[in-house]
Amino acid sequence: MMRINLLLIISLFLSSTSSFADYDAALEGREEAERVAARQESQAQDREIAKMKANAMSQFNKEAIAEKRKTLGAQALGKSDAAVEVLYQQKIAADIASGMDVAAQARAALSSGAGADAVKQVTGKSLSELENMSDAEAEALAAEMQKKYGQ
Image 1: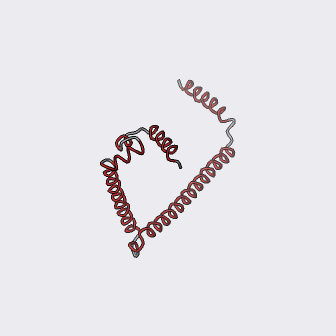
Image 2: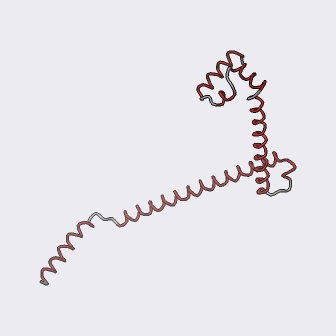
């Protein structure tokens, strides 16, 4: 029994040493060093790209806040960037609300009385028909209006 175990161990040893015959520790070390160097270089490039993106975003934010301050004028003087952002968002909301009011007034004027008659006379369609047109129909009407009225 001991003899079989000994033969088995020797045969395993001999069969496994052939798999290490082409092993070159120095080559493996160089290849590992190259892989590590490549990984470090890639990480350095990634850090540099992230830094460039952060700098670009910072510059963009500075310019955007400067434009918002310019738009707000005296209202933005002495305010923090966060306060300027809040004021700007409030201004945009007020401008949108004002525009929606003007649009509603125009729609009301063009959907009844003389306004509705004028729209029908110029386009041949009512305001509700114009609003419900497909894109293709609207483009065809625009081309027709351009031929009819010039420009």
